[in-house]
Length: 313
Image (cartoon, rainbow, N blue to C red; front, side, top):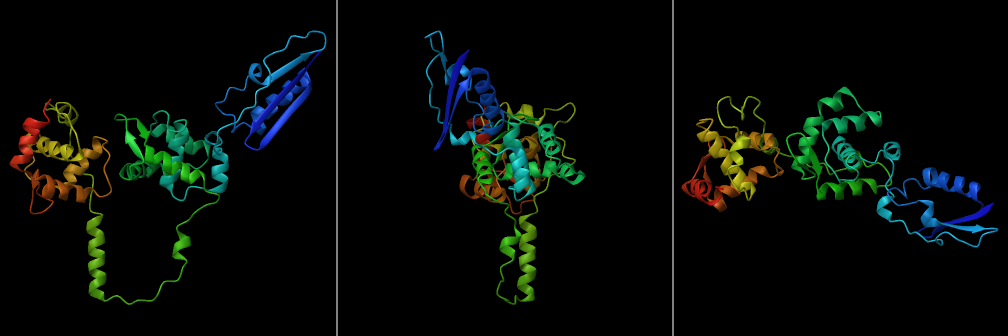
């Protein structure tokens, strides 16, 4: 019969097991699978590295005991703990966490079915969550937390990883009610200013996807194939390429900002929250486009030359 000794260390925590070989092995595996499961995830815990055997009759030994310091990044909470503590403060944050975990911490791509599976595993799937999934994914795109790998698969961006870790580092749930509970001074706003404020807010949220915009017309070149003919270098290039396609291939006479927004959305391009300002900059700084209103956007000669000469493959 042989004696075994196992020594594990995590930060200031240290544990050592010594005694009968079979008993120590059983305790070792129990700690590995239950007590330290999240901490040692992804770390080689095979006995060959961490066991020193002392044979009573044989002086030969296995490799000596090593002290292992486990990295803090591997000590992420389990999904069950996240659900119990309700760490995400909104449904978009829940989806970001689902994406983060379903991709093994942003190391691979995911699709909508992966998110639905995560909903089911945490028993949070409802009809409302399912119907709003696409809009919430779209919101994460606008915030820069997700990126498209292709038409069906997505990636968690670096900003998305940072925000996911911020959520996981919370110690309790954060709700939007906490700020609203503070009393605000009672300031009267003239009726005219109230109307202007509502009007401004409505305009800021006026970007919409045009449902009947067909970017894969039968017998014509699709916008996906059209983009492949150019070396796109910036969002400004994507905007003027979109205008060119809508104008030359689809023969749309008046191209609005919603046409451009819809095309980029279908192309699964990352669309910033300040998209209107980007379009304004393409007009005022780049001089690629011109318009009197955002319902009738046209290419300038400079913009047309860039498409025809500068970014053509």
